[in-house]
Length: 405
Image (cartoon, rainbow, N blue to C red):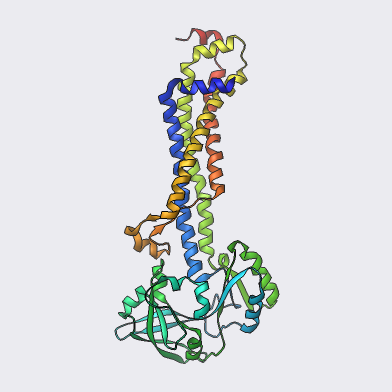
């Protein structure tokens, strides 16, 4: 009976009920859309970092992360390679040589982050191969080099032009070699494009006189969520303090912290939207109570319990909140699903977004837990907003309420 009465009372003043209903729908859509955009910013930044250079797990000589000098190469790389070849959960891995250096063209020079890679394996680790916009990827031939578009523009070089790379050898002397530009890449990270160059690992080793030595093993897993577990398994198998085995969360602590903080900050959004809805619901339900003072007085006079009247008013608000949230979540979910495929083109802000490693096209997404959070929170807010009007209703005196004009 209470449900039937509550439903009828909602539509006694359709305009007011629709205003509250639409407010709840818009609130649900706004929360989901904001969460989707926030996730797009942070997840794309993380994904781009992982897929460009970080990977899911990295293995170095202990201390390399803090002191990336050429002398800190991985001890016994053959042992590490054997372990990774038999490690379950590992999708692919690649060896890298890494050092700082200088790259010069006929017109300019620039400090660079020189990386020697295994061309046949690196394509499974890094997405640099898929970002080539001119020329081709490394083939293993001597003298090949890949540059980012920003760096190529700075050096004023094109495909086929020669450049000279220089870096410190083990004894402190300068190792150098001549390279021919075979490919230019453009990623979503402009800073990466300005500083990173890639050459074949064997030429990196020859140039710096470190045959067979590498500085890093980059590992991609079948499931990134298993990074911590596999990381511990690799550590146990190596069983040597000479190595540091780090997950992407340990390699990108500031970015992971930023993601965690963004999730915490969504509580502020929930609070603001919830507060706005509470005041709207209080206003609407109070008006509804004042319009029905005579009826409520009659119900009290014939012996209807105050708990039932209290529950009826809460139920009215709950029904509005529940249906508004369901429709708002459905519309928001469809919107996010469509945009997750098509993306939101923010090419007008491409330079700013690329400087953060995000990319000009955002792909919003929300998790099931975030969707459930909206479905639970807003109906609860609706009930909270109806408590004050419900209290006012049960405090009415039957005789005075019946005579109320």
